[in-house]
Length: 170
Ligand code: GTP
Image (tube, rainbow, N blue to C red; front, side, top):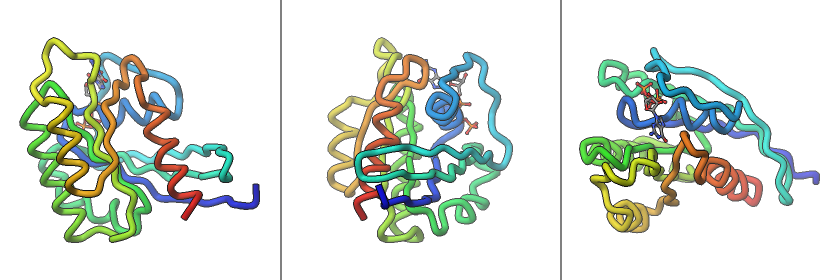
């Protein structure tokens, strides 16, 4: 296809929700039980081939620790897509995710493709955020919604493909 796009993608969300793990699952097919907390931000690159064309993602995996919050605008500025991640076993992380969505709506690129990802979907027995709650919030705020697991790979490729499809079409 002639339609080749390069897109900046940023991951935001509370510490420990699995941002790095989602990226490592997508880019390297790996998962680590003891993934280290990100300092500042980490950069990854991955190209997806779709029917619509190819999408080269420049991925900024930001650090969730509060002390890095002020750096976030550097990473979401100019981003074509944002993935806001929470952990389905933590209501606090869902509250934090909603704050990120508000910040992106106020300060982010209005055309940005935004996805809400309820990660750690494998932790069903520890669930604190109902699927319906995440889904409704996403619908009301114009985000795509997926529950994912970096551990089992559930919906991880789907997450990036859905974004890629929307960017390749645009
Ligand atoms: P910060 O860099 O501190 O912002 O964290 P992060 O959001 O990048 O989270 P990270 O990927 O470092 O994962 C935190 C912990 O959760 C690690 O111990 C991971 O192994 C674990 N983890 C990540 N994703 C999943 C998942 O889908 N399921 C389960 N059960 N554990 C996960």
